[in-house]
Each structure stands twice: as structure tokens, then as C-alpha cells.
Length: 263
Image 1 (cartoon, rainbow, N blue to C red):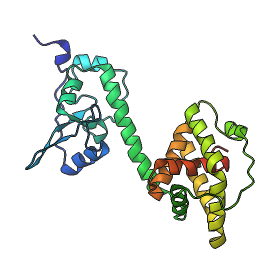
Image 2: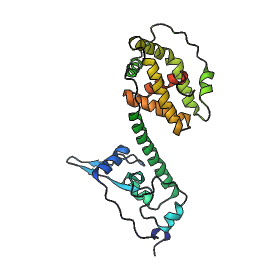
Image 3: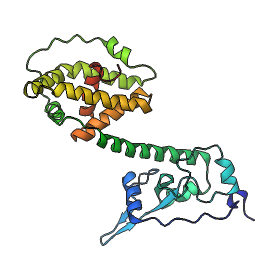
Image 4: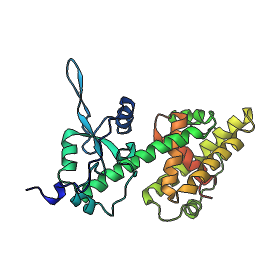
């Protein structure tokens, strides 16, 4: 006798055959590792590399009566169950564990993982659309080289300035990190920008406008200030190809203090 959750309630939806480019795109999205256990999705031998994954439907392709009831209030990523947004590569073991039996918590875990992956892809698309002055890479290089200001710059730092700009809810560790970056690096970055301005007079004005524009665009669709900071730092990191994300965070923190971010 078959259990209720094993009985489909309507005719089967045909399983789509996915092209190699689609599979490659999905594998790239998870960096060729199972998003649940982090095992490689390929098995390498001395002679060849073999596939060690299956494309899993997050919302089931042909949900049973039990699954429809279980997931009736669950969010979905696309109305088309065969759409790439509803697919994710899993290793054989994790795919079997995800499907048998289906659980609400297991579904929501994979839903949130895929949602974050989609958002990350969208961020890269956004980063491509917004320009950033190339000279900022020279500032990143100076940070990496631990360059110090040529002379002491008068700088009255008031922690309340940051606190007044960063509204709750905001992770306290990130707020403290931003404050630390401002205290440590604001004078140096201000001086480096001033040096570039001597050769290219409009540099600081254009850079400020670019940062401001990107911030305003992000704030239209996101009201989470910590997420906006991460997006700005990610954009700077992507555009400058900085060796470490922290250097991009330092630049972003400078513009928090400088009022381009969090007015």
C-alpha cells in the first residue's frame, strides 16, 4: 500500500531536458559544490572526471497530495517548476535525503539557499551596470601596501556621527567595524583622494556622485542598511578587483562618514 505522500494528485508534469549551458550556469552558481554538504559535485579519477550530482527541483516537479498540503503556505521562487530558479544541483546523497521524505524545514532551507544565490547573481548584474572611477583602485593598492598619511590630518571623529546615520536594526559588530575603519583610515583616504584631485580635478566629485547614485538605487529596493552596506562594499570589491573584501569595506566606511551613504 502506498502512503498518502507517495500518491500524485494530477497528471505528471514532464521533466524538462536541460541544455549543457543551463547545467553549467547552475553549477557555477553553487561553485560546483553541493550547497547542503559542500562536497564536490564531480568525482575525479586518474583518467576522467565524472558527474556526481543531480538537478533537484526545490518545489517538487509532481507534488503528491501530502507534499501539496505540506507546502501549501510555502513561498516559491518561480511559478514554473521547471524554471532554473526552482532548480539546484545537489550531490546524490543530499538529493535523496531532500526528497525522501519531503519536509517543510528541508524545503525552506533549500529555498533560502537558492534565493540568496539568485540575489547574488542579480547583484553582479547590477555591479556591471554602474560605473566607478578606475583611480579608486590606486587607493585600494595604497591600503594593501599599508601606506601612512604624509602628515597628520586634523580629523575630529565623533562616534555619534556614525550612530546617527546608522539606524536600528543594524548588527552591532558591523557598526563597530565601520567605526573602526573610519577612525583608522579616514584621514589616509581623504589625503589619497586629495592627491588624485591634484591631477584630475573632478575625481572626488565624480566618485562621490557615483557612490551616492549606487546607494540611492539600492535604497529604493532595500531598507536593510546592513545589506545595503554589503552591496556597496561588494560593488567596490568587484569593480576594483581588490585582493580582499576588507579594503572595499574600508572605502565604503569612508563614504558613510562622508555622507554619501546613510545621509
